[in-house]
Image 1 (cartoon, rainbow, N blue to C red):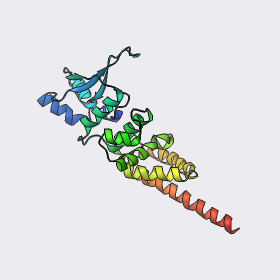
Image 2: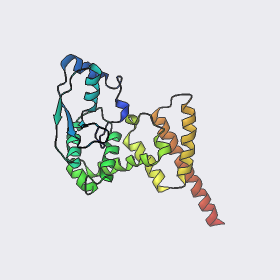
Image 3: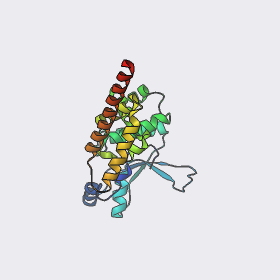
Image 4: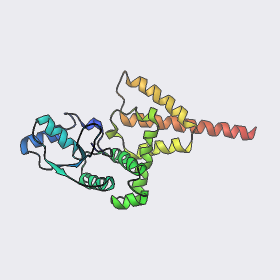
Length: 220
């Protein structure tokens, strides 16, 4: 796939693609995959998928010929194409989009956040919140708690990242809680919303603790 694609690997399974597999088995592949030719590819692969990874997986699973529409475009143009192609799809989570947007902006596919919002037809406020939430990936110990990032919701992740950015002292407490949760998850399944809630609790608890210490210090 294209390096800036917005499909997490968790989608590449029969379970996650069952609806599409059934549809293509019954009706054939109606919508082609968008792909771009790679010149002098190091890994020997000559094409990269810009949009349509689930269709690629489903067709491969069924063992049928894949319909491909070749595109000649820059990375910036590919980002716009992918966003338009997936805009009305309900099976791509906002957090997947958020990570993709962050990667695109970090790689300077767009000159600014405002320019990206305009090019991708996104509200500036929404894009800003999504990009902030995507910073969760910078907190590796926390990020890797989530085996399926498609279950992450923007608002709670945004709240957690804000806590971490606002209070650096909370990071140690949250990392400690993350380790405890990881250990607990080796014995039982913990829902994504519960994990987020527990992490935010640990951050707020540390924030209150720091406030009390600061207050006592001033009084003393």
